[in-house]
Image (cartoon, rainbow, N blue to C red; front, side, top):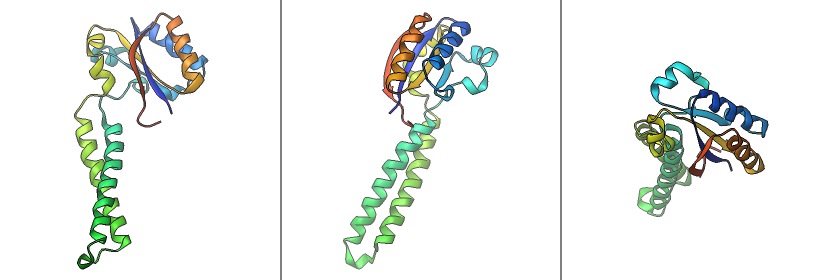
Length: 165
């Protein structure tokens, strides 16, 4: 499982050095992203490097799992009541419907709330610092941590498992 780590850098050059150090330590390019104040992002950061501004994907995944579980449970309960005539296929259909509704509603709610990194480090972002976000696993994550800190980036207290690893 990948762990998300966040580092604060003073400018885009230092963020690029940190990204290069992480790549050299074995972190794939797609596991690196940047977060900055909107004026900095618009002017200096390429679109493919920008981290998501919302909690859309993790919320959709949580909703899919929770809705599917709730729908399946409701279908199984309905199976236990003979007059309803629900079969196993009906219970599975209820689970699938619950998963779709759960993913849809959670994704809508997640799209309106900022991602956890932006929420936690809003002060750093508003101060003009650029955050380097690294999703690393195992030894590669540890090597990347040491290499990024060696570039002068400051590790921030955010050490959580990623939702989509």
